[in-house]
Image (tube, rainbow, N blue to C red; front, side, top):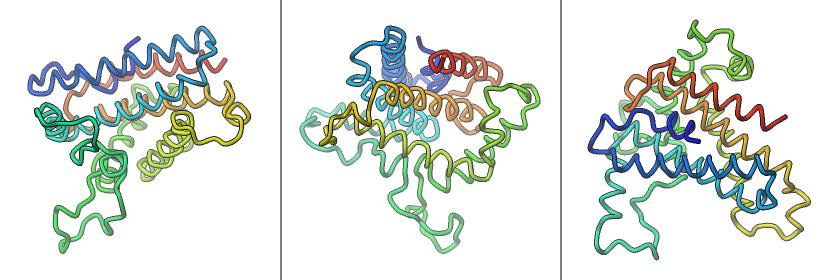
Length: 252
C-alpha cells in the first residue's frame, strides 16, 4: 500500500538533488500506511499499542515531505547535518524538523504583510498564516472550484464545512488535535487505565482521521503551482479517492 506516500511525495524522481531524501520519506510513509492497514484488516490486539505510533509517524513524515516540497533546502540542510561525522542521535539537533517551528509557528508574527517587518521575522510554518494566505487557502479554493470533481462526495464535507478563507485555520486545529491525541498513545501519559478513554474504537478513529487529514493536504498541495513534485490534478484526485474509499471501508 503506497497511495498516501504517492500523494504526499508526488513526482519527486524528476528532482535528482532530493530524490534520495524523498525515497526515505516515501518508504517510511508507505511502511506506516501498510502497517496500519494490516492492523485494521486483522483487527489486531496490537492496534491500541502500535497504531498511535504508526499514525503519528505518518503525520510527521507527511508534514516533513510537504515542507520540502515548498522549500527543498530545508530538507537538504537536515540531510547534510545528519550526514556529518560528529552528528549524534543522543542529543537534540537544533537544525532538525520541529513540529513547533516548521509545522506550527512558535508565536504569532503579527500582521503577515508589514513593510517594517524584517524578513527573518516572517513566520514560515507549514500551517502558518503566511503560507496559508499565499498557498493553502488559494489552492483549496481552486480545488473546490474544480468543475471536473464538483459533485464528488469525497469532498462534500470540506465544501460544506470548511470556508476557503479559513482552510489553514482548519489545518492547524485538526492537525493539532490529531497529533495531541496520538501522542497520548505514544507517551506514557495516562495514570488511569488507558483502555478507559483510549479503547480500540477510539484508536481506530484516530488512525483514520490521521490518514484523512494527510490525504486532503496531499491533494490540495498539487493545486499549489509553486510546490515542487506536483502531480496532474486528475492523477492526484484518483489517489485521493482511493484513500477516501479505504477510510470509508474501515469505518463500516
